[in-house]
Image (cartoon, rainbow, N blue to C red; front, side, top):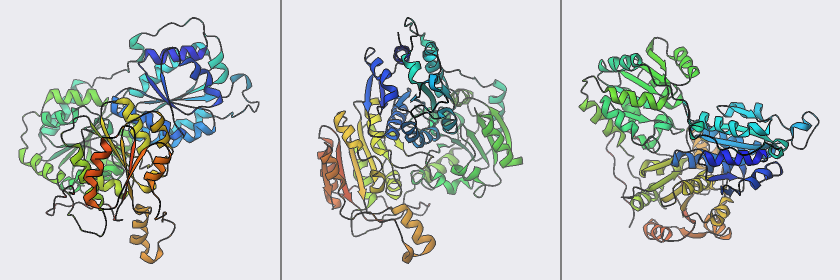
Length: 542
């Protein structure tokens, strides 16, 4: 059997049922090998889109997302999306074709040092140089992708290695793919609980892999057990994520911060450096480099740190409990701050929060709902006004453009879900051609494009920092119709110019089979700024 057959067999043994890919010469042996185990190939129109699909698949399913791209330029196209997957802590394995080992150093077609190029973006990168090693290498990649802080792993697959004889195909044991788990020492758990007991206003800050969408209620259970407020930080706007309401204001009142699997970085205001400089900090993290950086940044404020895998640490702390601490008023105060929303403001056109309100109404009561928010100011308005049992956003990387690939990956991970994906018109341009992929693959979802004919986030910066008269380079075509483009690519489309038409159009779109694009002409406005001042609820139009 070829090395490609061994790799395909290992993928099947790992439970992989779908691979997101864009074809190329060097990976044709693996395409051929995937036929026998019946692993589906979803063929994207850009390599970055394939990685985004694998990212969303991993987030929604909790399983390994696998992307497969060709060498050199194809591999290079995937790197930006790989960074996003890393920052979102998604267990993704990127497989890339590679030039033959027999021609190393001779200028082979698309010869390129992929391992060196991939290393800054992944937990590990390996070039497999023997056919008999492909199965074990894939098993290692899966284990590592899920271990500690989840994240992407890369394997480069030379063309001759895929074609070389690897002997008879032998199935791998089920535990070959199980990640190693480091249980925290009881002394570590006891020390954290003891210190927490001494705080009147502690906060727990977690990273993306403990978010409500992906943590399977672990964070809520941990907050209840420790009797403290807990949030996950997963937005590129950090404390200014409008989905967090006025959380930044209560952070200033905290006397203790516990970081679990969350680096001390911009997302927390560098552990409340300006908001709560007197708060003591504890950190549990699987990465010693993250702890070392916290030690350097926080000095005496860091009162306790230990290496610990994220999920086992969360489970052990939940089992240990609060040590008798009672903080009902503090938890209620933080909950009220998190619930704060912006005051609605009228305008001449459809408002982004009206779109969010209509979406929220359409998802109400649906435990299977998946909400995807991508883009700049429009995406922030939606995050402020809509939510779902499962939410995917563009993550700490701040990259935009993944909304359509995310919807396809989420659909493959959860076929029966109601999926609505929202993006600005700037975002829509990155992977517009994936509407064709969505139609070809018969994936059902509704994509809403907030069309304000500009790169609004950047224009807001220009006006704020340089003056209204110095706007430059951020306009888009006012007559662009993304619904018509989607129709031309095999989808269905609707166009909305009045807020009152939103509920009916959305209901009709959700009743369609296949992917649907709704182009909504919206008023351009800056992202919401949330405070604890009295807010006016934004109701869905109609």
